[in-house]
Length: 434
Image (tube, rainbow, N blue to C red; front, side, top):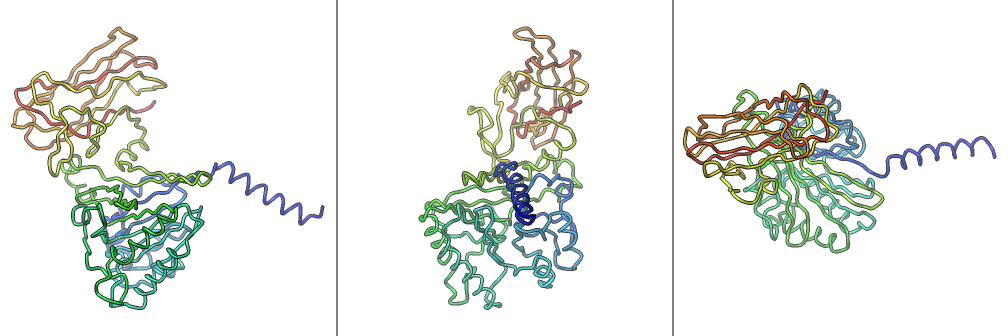
């Protein structure tokens, strides 16, 4: 065997070995509406360890004035790897409104709209800012969509990335005005007529693709100020997802920051071998806490009713799902768990929660017990008095004199000890590892 053949075989073995070692598993991050300033993004996103994501997908409005200078391209490449292959960026109005589109297109080496095939998935990156004032590009974008939907065959999934809320009139979906910042019901897919919005011109093509056995997912980024996430299915089985950041605007007001519904990012897990693509929404603040050494014992979160016991769960507009302790001595067990592989720092568990009372003067107790099998080793309680009739953030340290060891059982409950109903949300228990 000659040297060139040996070299080729060695090269192939290295690449196939690395592919096998990865196990065909890939992780993707989607985030949007991330701006903090004209040339800066949300500081939490800067701090977030993004090295575990193979690719980053952006839903637009990344800086408030993204294309105001070329240097912003370098900054976003440093923070979000926008120049790397298969990292996608659908431009928002904040990205586009200063013109200078050539800064972006030269940096990524593509138009502001394009299609890509990678890991068995076809992705269409849309520029939803295009309108009939630029018929050439608007028509070319539509032709690109048609070419993809007409010819797609080998892909397991077709993903479309949007910024604007174009999904008006989709069977089985609420209009974007309910959950998004925008509701472009008269957006034009091309310049052929004025009656050719997304639901009329593009959505039927997506249904055809889905009926040919390709899963279709639409992802939108113009969200975050009110609704933090959407995960919906149309009547035809098309998947619609979306999320965006916003809470950084409350960074100067601790009370507002802590009582708002949490900002989330969208995380995808892709197994190429079995063609599965799954996703979940992850609380950005909690991800940063984990990076700082915290481990979560439990979490009862905003807008996730499935985490709370079914009884006494109510919905309050603009405050999402809340758990109500409506009667004196009524309680909710927020943790009843066997502790394993724990190395708790200074025997402290941190309790945080968002609480309110139906009238001023409500009162609760946090009761926490450490057990060994059936024996109670230690029991303590903290009383929180004079609850307000507005959402207030509380943070308490639950500290034990007994060493917390693996194999012990920890039970924590909240009891209403006042004369008025109390509402609870975003209850978290976490500790710091040694």
